[in-house]
Length: 48
Image (cartoon, rainbow, N blue to C red):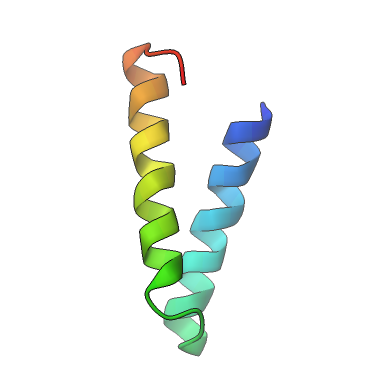
C-alpha cells in the first residue's frame, strides 16, 4: 500500500468518525472529496 492509499484510508476513517462524533466540521468533507478525486484518478491510470 502506497502513501497516498494510506492517507485515503485515514481520511475515510476520520470522515466516518466525524459523522459518528460530530467533529471536524466541513473541512473533513472537503479533504475527503479531494481524496476521492485522487483515488479515482489513480484507478483510471492518471499520474497523481
